[in-house]
Image (spheres, rainbow, N blue to C red):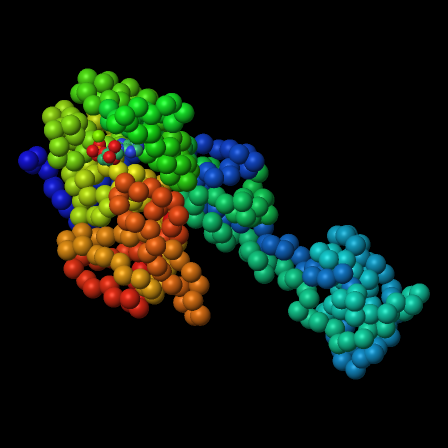
Length: 401
Ligand code: AMP
Ligand code: MG
């Protein structure tokens, strides 16, 4: 048995790996190239949004006092369709200004009535309803100049990119994506597209894991799959540590004679922990190969996915100062039996449906850790604490997939 922390709790595994950091470079990119990039600074708004009071409707601007006893007929004194046109306009008692959505409010006016509620006859407008002070979008009501609007570590979404443009940014400092080597191991694995021979299966983990790496905003590098020989594995790990920032392996981390990732890490690497009290996904390891951090993920497809979400993702996100879990969590009521285990944090894959006032979780698919369909067709993982009972009807925490 190696003299490293062994079969640790999930929180212990996280504490151990968080001690190893990686410096991630920062680059400045034009906004166009910032989609799915990780923001490397807190971003302060350069402007008030909106920058001026403006109309929320196509209609008329006037004094609210003039409109409280509809129908009311007012004189149309001007049209404001764009900024600048309001400068010489002052709305007096008995007057109205034709105004377009987004155009600046004229002085003197304090309310809007939408066009549908008016009858226009030449230069007179009859208001069929009392006007609306609420139909003015006030200067700074969305964002105020100087306010921190997005924090460092945020993986930028389309609407956040739009907000950056609204705030006046043409370029942003973002973290350079980590290059993450993904190495699948196992003599039984062949590439999809080839014909399966007896005893072979298609290599699938590297494809799924590559997607998880991209999901966090980094760059997956799928290396060639290695057979179960120490020489091949050593050579591929060396190549990966020279060309990439982080190594993820799949397979070969259990107790068996052919579990060569575990073996080579014990003999030639630096091992920080091995095995975690997590189901599925109990055999992972973490450490350094040369000086490159390495996570050894289990070979079973569900296990490798779960370990990525529960250990690798928090570690990677921590490097860029991201706060909180990446995935949405919620609570749901169990409508089927789900089985916890005695000593491991257990994650079962469930479907989530909307109940009357709550979410309903049901386990519908065979839960083998080799059954990737159980992951692919489920909406969430339920979090089951070791030793607790989970009868039908219990409220449980869920992690959306
Ligand atoms: P191992 O941890 O290497 O013993 O692998 C555990 C199980 O996962 C075995 O049934 C393997 O065939 C399977 N497995 C290992 N690596 C992969 C992979 N890259 N893609 C799909 N299945 C895999
Ligand atoms: Mg194997």
